[in-house]
Image (cartoon, rainbow, N blue to C red):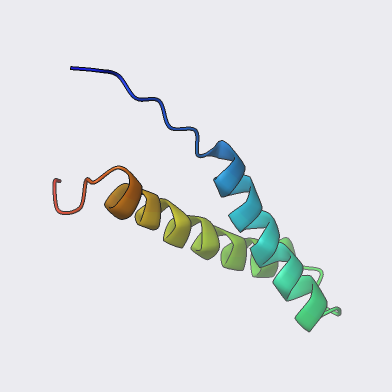
Length: 62
């Protein structure tokens, strides 16, 4: 019954930043935060789902 701590905050920040950077570089005229933050949220969602299923081994447990 060991305890294992996994930090994913850095991964979340990197995923969010990557999404924002992608929008800013591909569409430099976009300045509405709703546009680039929706992409950033999607990137965070994908990364968190990846962590839940592959790193934490919690796929299909809810």
